[in-house]
Length: 114
Length: 113
Image (cartoon, rainbow over all chains, first blue to last red; front, side, top):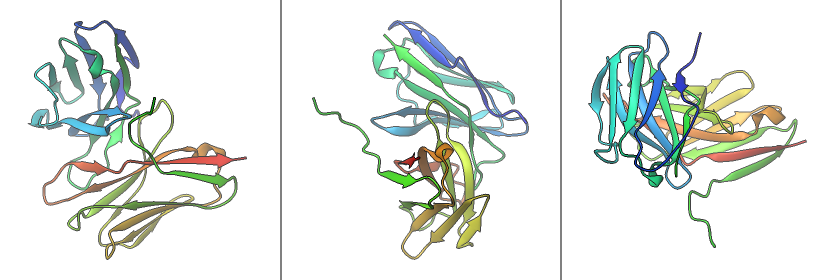
């Protein structure tokens, strides 16, 4: 089975530009999570979708961040405008259900904002 | 200058020896626990999980032990191999409708040849 697929794997862009990260969850999984990982703060949950509906976006740092899940097989995380402090590795994870279920992670997008 | 950030516990182990990685969790209401392995440049990879109605669970070369009395979780890796070098995270879920996984800071395991 294919795992969680994220694209791009690496993104380098200049401050102020729009960045869009993409995620394809595992087929049959109905919960999707976006995380950010930095050395300073470790893994932080940004937003959680269940059945394509955003349930909790309290981890989204600012209004510059937005996420969508138009269907069960695709989600995007957008940063507009981007800032250097957004530089991090962004992970998408999915699970079958959410409570008491293992989340399966993609290999992340390493984002560098210059 | 001094670097500031998460200071991860480290474990250095000789190839072929057994490894034990420990984790203290915070919430006595947590009822589901997972161990993840993260290699450089990759996402966290599921290793093994355990529910709070169990004390021990075994997988291939790995065993997870849960001590609810002292809120402690451990991962044992038998016959450690070079490919086991990675950062290992424990995560807890508090159940009762809570979807969030709370991750520990991680332990860096280095296998010596």
